[in-house]
Length: 231
Image (cartoon, rainbow, N blue to C red; front, side, top):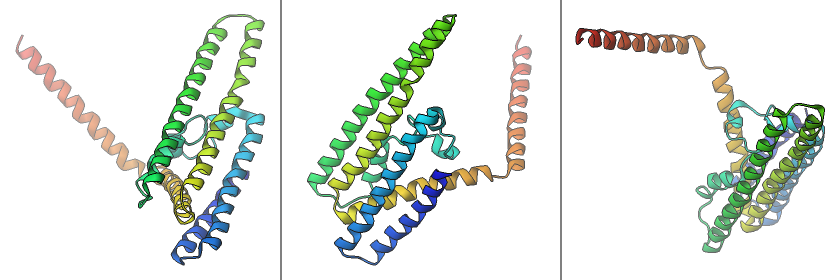
């Protein structure tokens, strides 16, 4: 429910950013709107911190997201380096100093992501070895190890939050406004893609699948007949 309210507020703030850019507001007025958007994201990270303490699996499995968003899920959220890739091609013109700063941010994000991913993989492997051993003692150890998942999610969220703040510092206020508008629009399109996927015509797809299956079966029969005729 909190996330749903946050999404509604996100749509309003994206519209506000778009109107501000189209109206060519002064930097001072624009800064107020951009700072409010950063605070808006800080709020969702605080909510996620509370949710992780209650049920870390709810966040990690992405139940709160749409199917298309779950395709890109990394430790319960977006991968910062991927977000930078999406943005960097749309934020021209950038100064040389800004380009260096953004690519440096992307590289440091990737390094942090790799370290977290490796740590999570090691935890998973350790859990597997613990669970295969029978006995209540081993299950108690497994439970203790599962508690570490919250730490991984917290670190991943900190990286996401720091990336947004770093982008804010590297870019001009007008570029930052466009940056955050693009982020909101990108995830809005992923949610729209999920809606289109859910509402796609199933009957025609089933007919296509049946047609494809029939074609494959005919090809198999023909291949079989050709094989036996040559024997």
